[in-house]
Image (cartoon, rainbow, N blue to C red; front, side, top):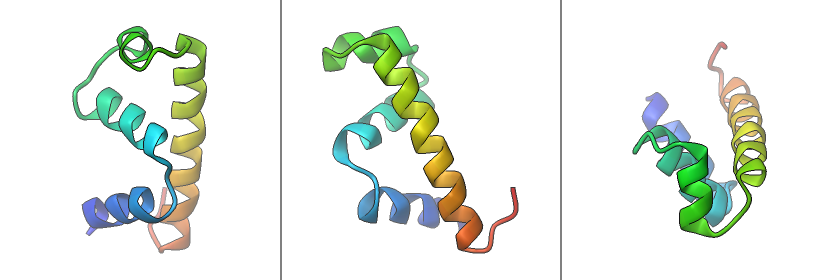
Length: 68
């Protein structure tokens, strides 16, 4: 199940800050500026981490047999 594979990715490969950013953006649907404010980091850093996390997640899922 895709949901379980995404959870596996964050448990085994994602770091804590990237997991927080990803959840805040895609689960709580917060704007990147709000995420940056809550975590006390730059908005550009949030957007960069989201981009890199999406790319890593995509690669992980392709390696697990999912088609993108």
